[in-house]
Structures are given as C-alpha cells and as structure tokens.
Length: 316
Image (cartoon, rainbow, N blue to C red):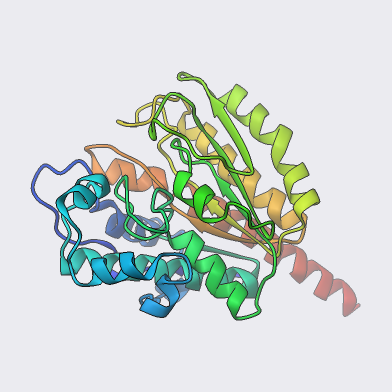
C-alpha cells in the first residue's frame, strides 16, 4: 500500500515579514517528501476545502460567520495571533478539508497523512495560538455524521496542550482526548483532556518515550476507536523555538513510528496531522516535520509486504 498524503496549495499564504508563525513550512514539507522519494506525485491527494456546514459541526455559527466575513474584533485577532484575511480563511478551510480527507483515506487504507493540520488551540467560539479552525474536531464530527466512525481517539503529542480539542469534546464519551505536553508552556491555563500528561521542561527522549509507552497501548485497547487522529507536532524537539523539551531527531522518529505501529497493530486506522514546529530555517523545519510521513511510509510498506507474502503463500 502506498501512503496517501494530502496537500493543498492554499496551505501556505502570505504573512507579514518577520511573523513568527513559519507558514512557509507547509509547502516545503510536500516538496521534501517528493525530493527524497518518500512519496511520488501519484500519492498526493488534494482536498475539497471545508464548507460552512462542516465547520459549524465543531464551531459556533456566530464565530464561523464572523471569520468568513472578516469581522473578528481586534481582541479576537490578537488571541488568534494571525492577521485575518481572505487568504487566511481559505487556508483554514483547506487545512480542515485536508484533515477530513486524511481521515477518509486512513479509514480506507489504514493510514494516511496530511501535510498540515493539528490546529488544536481553536475552540468552538474562538481561535487562538495560530489556530483558526480546529481541523481534527471538525473531521471527527464530519466522519461521525456520515456514519463512517463512532469512536475516535485523539493522540496529541504537540509540545503544547490540546486545549481547544479538549474543550470541544468535553462530555462526549465517543471521543477520547489524550494530550502529552510540556506542562510549563502555552497555554498558561490548561483545559481538561480525558488524559493529560504534562512533563517538565528539559524532558528528553528516554523519559518521554517511557511515558508514552506506559499509556498509549492501554488507551487504544480500552477505548477501541475506529480511528486515531495523531497530532505529530515536532515542537518537543530540543531546537524548537517554542518547545522547552529536549527530544532529538531520533526521538521524534521513534515516537512517530511507535504511535503509528501501536494503532496499526490494534487494527485501528491512523490519520496523521503535522501540528506545531517553530524554527527560522524552513527547510530544516520542514524536514523535521516529515518524520511522521517517513514513519507512516515505512509502516505502510511493511504492511504491504506482509500482504504480498500472504497472497504468495496462498497461491502455492
């Protein structure tokens, strides 16, 4: 099975010079994957941008309408951290549509990756922390409304707590939210996920992986999700500008492979989104983000190999 990877040209839009959100990384992620042969052009899928009807499954109508009309007040724009524009709205809709498509492809193939997504600081009634719409929340609601899933598990390993996602799914037992993050980091006031694990600044590969391995297999076994949405933020990396943890390249790669293999070993579809990552060198940052796509491609290839062996064996 080739790995389906989702990309839309609107993932990257202009921002003012010097803005600290590295929006150019999203196009480079796709380019690096192609340049390095991780995927081929035939593996790329282009999503349909999210409609208002999709967005209002997870967001208040008044908020969606204000965004679409470019009518957010100054306080709301400051909290978002991005200048509101038509291009930014198009980007938000494209990213949400991308995560919906990633979920669909994961259910079909077992595994799929977006080259954007993971906007977990967006709440039902407002955006925050560079997150306009909560793509994972919308995707779960869309897939459930269409009868494709009942139960979902969100595995959020971005360095920042998935506060918006936790708030949107509070009191909804069909969706379990798990956030493993740096406790002493944004947001200053945490929400309550179904499982929150805050680790201290400076936590490195060994401790981080031990914590993850202690909890993830049991969560998958107990919740029995139809799909896992995995936020593979790379901001736990030691060199990340906003991270404060100390994972290395090998630690991130091990983390991504472990999450994906745990899901697939349980027979659960895994939809991966890129989450946060902050650095001045966009090429280096984009390559760091491709850790999850490389892990997913390796797992997909291993699964295809096992299928081929079974088929060959059955012909004897």
